[in-house]
Amino acid sequence: MTSKTVLSSKQRAALESLATGATQREAAEAAGVKERAVRRYVADPHFVAALRAAQDAALGETVRRMASGTRGALDVLTAIMDDKTIAAGVRLRAADLWLQHTWRARELQDLAERIAAIEGVINDANQRTS
Image (cartoon, rainbow, N blue to C red; front, side, top):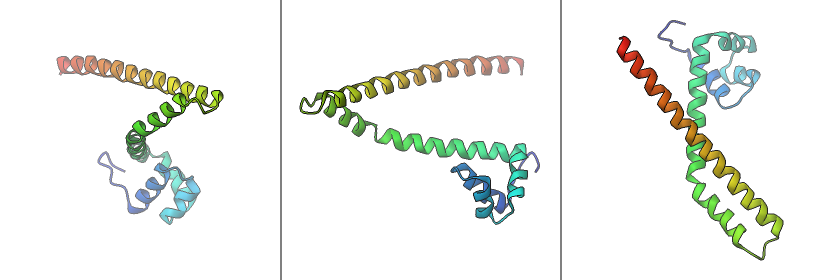
C-alpha cells in the first residue's frame, strides 16, 4: 500500500469486521478471503492505521449513544437512592455507582484538559520551528 493508501474492497470488508470486534477468522469469512490474508492485512502499518481510525469512530459512536442515555440513567439512580421502600443495599449500590461514575467522569475531563494543553504547547513549538 502506498502513503495514500486505498484499501481494496476485501480489505475494507475485513477492516469493518475487525473494527466491530470480529476475530481474524470471522473477518476473513466476511471479506471472502483466507485467514492468512487477514493476518497479512493486520501486519501492514497502513491497514493497522485505518483499523485504528475505524475502531476510534466506532468507539466514538458508542460514547455518543451512551451519553444520550445519561440523563435517564441518572434519573433511575436518583429514584433508587431516594426511594426508602427499596432495600438499603440496593440504594447503597446506586449511590456507589453514582459516585464511581462521577469520579471517573471528572478524571477523564481532567485528562482531556491536560492533553489539550500539552497539544497546544506542542503545536506552538512546531509553529515556531516551521
